[in-house]
Image (cartoon, rainbow, N blue to C red; front, side):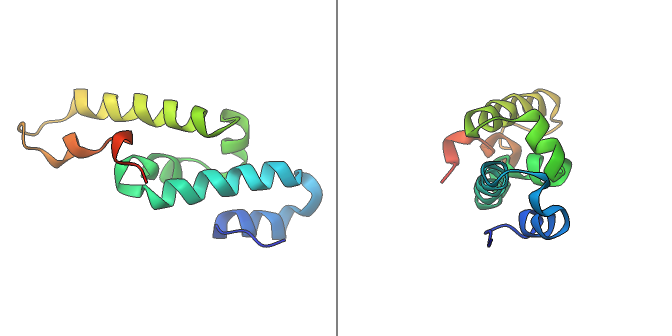
Length: 96
């Protein structure tokens, strides 16, 4: 099987049939969209979750978006910057 994301391909090469095709495809879809939207919160998933953790925590893209939305809101609440801080631009509204 071929996947868009290198982490998923590496996991497939290492684990083979440990996970179902649907699980590999789900993580591939999640990581692909998170890479595409890296600067708008996708980095939260890419930088903090391993393959197995994504499978345990999230069942679909809506779960990912909810998690990222909450995380981005927490970031904004903790930010130190002025009202023109670029952190304020990070949003799911900007997702492709």
